[in-house]
Amino acid sequence: MLIDSHAHLSMPQFDRDRDEVIRRAAEAGVELIFTVGTDLKDWPKALEIARGSDGVFAIIGIHPHHAKEVTEKAYSDLRTLSQDEKVRALGEIGLDFYRNLSPRDVQVARFRDQIHLARELNLPIVVHARGAHGEVLTILREEGAGEIGGVFHCFSGDYGMARACLDLGFLVSIPGTITFKNSEDLRNTIRKIPLDRILVETDCPFLAPVPVRGKRNEPAYVKFTALKLAEVRKSTFDKVARITTENAKRVFRLNGDRA
Ligand SMILES: [Zn+2]
Ligand SMILES: [Zn+2]
Image (cartoon, rainbow, N blue to C red; front, side, top):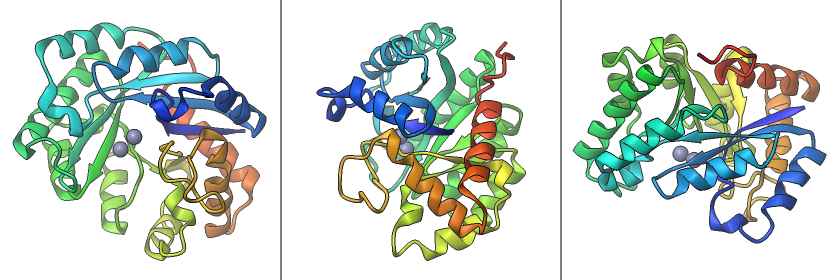
């Protein structure tokens, strides 16, 4: 059994065949999918998808791309919706200084606000960091986010970054890029991260792994990422599947201890 720790099932790329995508994931051994809602309009849709299927949970938050659109209503909606037991984390939150779709200072402010909110709501956080690894780590340290805990999703950092994440008590979630030919640096980093701190994800519909690279990604394909992870670590698929599943259940508190 596997868990896709980060998918975007609410995106229009899945409007035509969403139920079938969820069914195919179950058939491929994907026990649970965490679908991420990235803005005010996206949250109810992500939550509705999660409510519609035993195998789907939701993560909701203001993505750094949408930081500039935030209103007071966004925070009150976020607060209300995250009371639902299907919501298991606040995310994805963080900084994206690669695409810069919101001004940097606004991204920083919204990131800090949401770390505070996660603390108030007693939810772990799912962090998006692109082109801003150092800045994200500084903010997490300043905000004491180690006490909240969570996941660095779509991990793309070097070993120094991985080490800093682990020292903060966070887990790292590995995307399909681990299967790409030119990802040797990432594979070398992942070799050194303890397996009990690793999750796997698709980030679908994006980043489809080899051998489906270039296609629309979907949760069933997380198995290719787990297979590659097993190969990289000279482990077995069964062990990687079992441990990453346990890790996801622990960090998203699926063993019955959500406050
Ligand atoms: Zn992301
Ligand atoms: Zn995402």
